Image 1 (cartoon, rainbow, N blue to C red):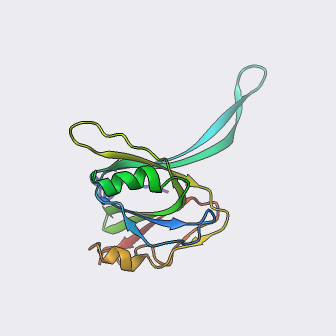
Image 2 (cartoon, helix red, strand yellow):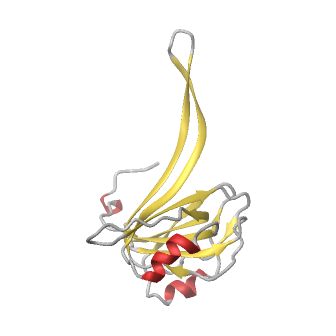
Image 3 (cartoon, helix red, strand yellow):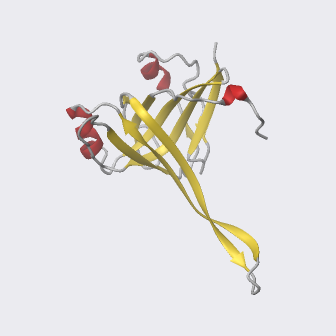
Length: 183
């Protein structure tokens, strides 16, 4: 049960996101890729509900409907390689996403999204030139064990000790949030 905790208040995220090509079933199919600096991200996990009324108009039940999980945000870099990647390379491809979300209450917080597809898009406004992205997080039929992430991420200078290595996105779990104590 959540409790009131000032240490759990977070103003800034971790600013890091990595992707790895996977098969449509979630099997590793490539190496981890650093997408560069992040301006912001939003995880949206929404399940529709259908309210059931009796003949008097009173709501007597609420049934769950479709679940929609998305990760969206803004990449800060707008070099040609990143632009081409987010418009062309992501088309029809599946990815696993690792997101370092920062330190929360003395713990490194990380999220692994099992099977994802990016919406190919490019929208560059004059001025700041930031790239928006949106990824649909797909339901994984089987559990997805995470391995091999630590070497790629350590090379980029992040310090969490777990890097979600050895964690598993449960079957039908979409993603997993992991917290590891700051050493």
